[in-house]
Structure formats: structure tokens, C-alpha cells
Image (cartoon, rainbow, N blue to C red):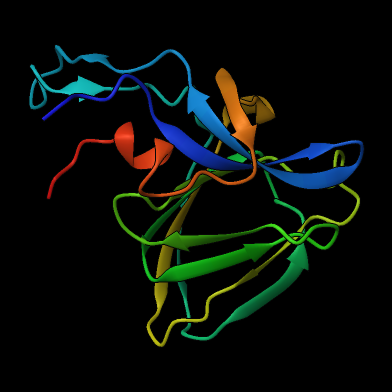
Amino acid sequence: MVSPSTLNLTALSAVNGQSVFECWALQPGFVSSAQPGTAGAISLQLGNLANASYAIIPAGFDAGRHNAPNVQYVVFLSGLAHITLPNSTQEAWVQGGRNGMIFAADTADVSLLGHSTAYPSGDQTVAMQIPTEGGLVPNHTVLHSGPCVVGTEYKRNLIDLD
């Protein structure tokens, strides 16, 4: 098994007042952990975080069009999220679990229309919203426009548990 060098994730950001998807590689990358309990494993720091909330979203829920309420990580622990942009045909399908983290930075001060999120599965979706301290965007490299695609660059940079 090859260890990843960094974590790639789909980001909702904004360009010229419009929400866009980008595939980001978080920087700096993974390092060997010396922390008790994970010593010898690899870890990646997410930066300074403000707080966190835990949401249980009903099956079939439609959150409608909105901006990100904060500059934040969103970690889908279970379920399915379908994210679309009102100014684009691009979409992101985010399956809860190992590949279920995105970064949302299309707040109202940078994006006029935001994005839409629906939860189309027949099961509840469980998500954690984790804003960054001071609304700071983490260091990253934009790999390409559009969402990351599981099974290509995204999965190559994650540990393959299969």
C-alpha cells in the first residue's frame, strides 16, 4: 500500500462572484505522526478550527440554494449529498464515509448565488460542519477546476483500505 502525499478534496469556492468547484490538494501534506495513539501513522493538519456542529439530515431532504454559512470543512459521515451550482452544469456527488469531506468557502461575501444541496438517498445523512478560525482558507494547491473524482486523483491520494 502506498501512503498518500496529501489530501485532495472538492472545494466550493468563488471566482468573480460565482460559486465554482475546484479540486484542491491541502498543503502541507501528510507527515509521520509522533502523537500517542497514532505514532507511526501519517496525519495532516487541517489548520486552526473554530468549533464544530453535528447534523442529522433527513432522507430526501432538499436544502435549496444557499451560501456556505462559514468558511468550513464539511465531513459527510454517512448518506449522500448532491451539490449543484446555479451558474453551471457541474455537479458533485459526495458519498458519506472515507471520501466524504469537502471544503465550502462560497460565503455570501464572495458568491452572489451560492450553491444548492440535496440529500437524495433513502437514508439519513450525517454531517459535521467545522468552520476555520477567522474564516481562513487553508493552504492548498488547485489541481483543476471541477470537483475531485473518486477513483482518479482523489483516491490515489488516499489510503486504499480495500
